[in-house]
Length: 117
Image: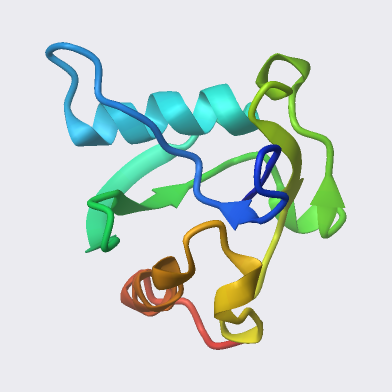
């Protein structure tokens, strides 16, 4: 997840769809713009209360080898303080920029076949 510069809280990479762009393409572009990660966008697994579609994504950046917190790309500095690997079941509502996103985050995590670790 990203640590959002304005709120100091965790958030999903996300943003508006450009003309003619699918939600999956938006997810790919916004993830790249805010994290520098080139992900393969899979199925939509949840939608937040604010209407943000959450997708299962695969990455090939060896995230498991990165520390829990690491730098975002320089071009994302306007929005992003840093990137963080999180365990959704260890978060509470106060960790998130939009507290109502916690349950959709957990639902998406489970829907993608992840464990509760």
